[in-house]
Image (cartoon, rainbow, N blue to C red; front, side, top):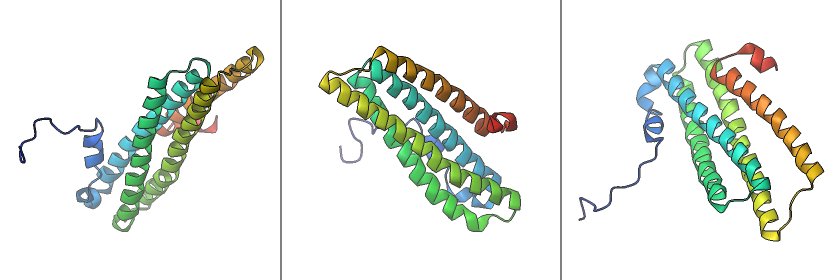
Length: 173
C-alpha cells in the first residue's frame, strides 16, 4: 500500500501539455515555443469560457458553476506561473530574432489571458454576492449588460482569431 495506492492519483487533463514545457526542448526553440503556444491557447479558452459562465451567473446563480470558475481560475493561474518561468528560462537559448520576438509576444499575452480569468472571477464573486443578498439587476441594466456581453464576445472572437490563427485583420478589429 505504500508503493501501490488503492486510489490512483488524480491527473490533470492538461498534464501532457504541462510536461511539454521541458528544458529538453530548449535546443529546439520552435518546439519549446509550440509547447508554450498550446498552453496559451488552453489558457485563453478557459478564460473565455469562464467569462461566459460568470456572465450567466449574474442572472441565474449556480454554486456548481461558481466553483467550476474558481477551479478553472486556479488552472489559469498555474499556467501563467509555469509559462512565466519557462519563457524566462528559454530566453538564453534563443539565437534567432524571430524566436525571440515570438517569446516576447508570449510573455506579454499570458498575463493578459490570466487577467481575463481574473475578471471572470470578479464577475462570479459579484454574482455570488448578489445571490446571497437576494438582489438582481433591473430589466434596463440586464439589457445593457447583454449589449456589453455581445460586444465582449466579438472582441474575444477576434482575440481567438488574432492569436490562434495569426489573423491580422482580427487583430486590427
